[in-house]
Each structure stands twice: as C-alpha cells, then as structure tokens.
Image 1 (tube, rainbow, N blue to C red):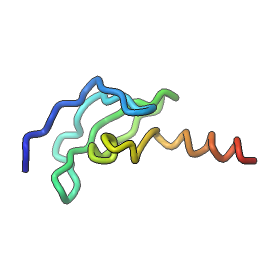
Image 2 (tube, helix red, strand yellow):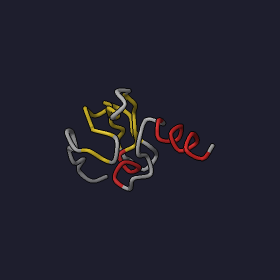
Image 3 (cartoon, helix red, strand yellow):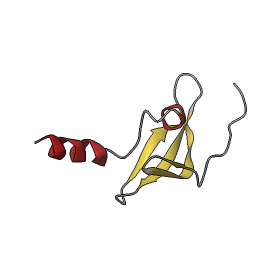
Image 4 (cartoon, rainbow, N blue to C red):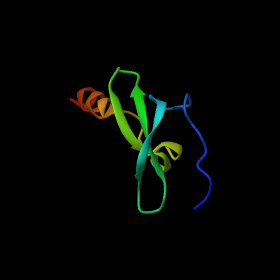
Length: 70
C-alpha cells in the first residue's frame, strides 16, 4: 500500500475534510475521512469516493434533487 496523502482542509463538492478516521479503510487500503457538509452535518467518506466525486454531500443533495423534480 502506498503512502496516505493528507487531504485535511480540502473541499470536494459540498464536503470539507476535517480529519482522518483512524484505523478504518476499505478492502483496497483507501482511508475514510471525517467530512463536514455545507449543510452542517458530518459524515465519514471513503477517500477514493471523495477524490472521484462519487460522494458529493452527506446525502442532503439527494433530497434537494428529489424536491426539484416533484
């Protein structure tokens, strides 16, 4: 496994990385990060998903998109 790059303070879409979740990673060695969403909620997100914008919020965007469609 390669060196883990510190991304604390970086923003990915609606999420800002607050800290690394110690001792937690997926089966491929990607660490999880504590993130704060623009709505104020906090969530743990896989770093691989963050960097590829697979996870863009705590889930609040999903609700906003549903409301717009209705």
